[in-house]
Image (cartoon, rainbow, N blue to C red; front, side, top):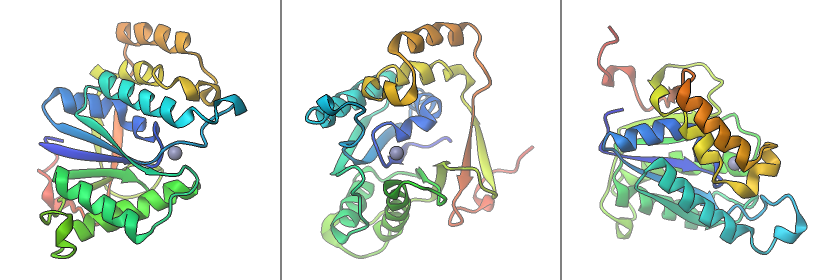
Length: 227
Ligand SMILES: [Zn+2]
């Protein structure tokens, strides 16, 4: 995980938090971490009174998450929640962001997803990773082939994986979920309970190991031998 730059793709604001401790650790160790979120999260409201403000609320929550994680930035591609489609226009947006960031590794959703936006995120991120490295659509930036591609979400699948220990950053999990106030009804939690958990976890951190499945384009030969 000794990368200079990585991209973490998420379908909705908060999907990326599945790898929050790993993102925080990599950022602290000098990796430029860019979270790229496909949708605006406009359907993630549990109460009708939140409908007109939910997008702005979630944008602010992403800003707060960015600060807690200590990562470089969030980019939101602005597709409508529950309406992300694998279109040419969206594919070009993703190619452009990959060519701008020039990551050595991309982390995205696995393939066995249920939510339509998650399925589209999986497809678009992989397809764009490939296209970004091809000599095509040159107006979208200088070609960039991303060497390593991983799945960080929906990783209940077989295949070679990298295990990444971020136990020192275990407290980032409750700390960052505390910033996602609009989703607390969904998570059946309160901000206060998350903040109390931060202190408990700091005092006694549980083993926190991310399992990143290697996409078949990434081969084990590219890694140093396991001792
Ligand atoms: Zn999602």
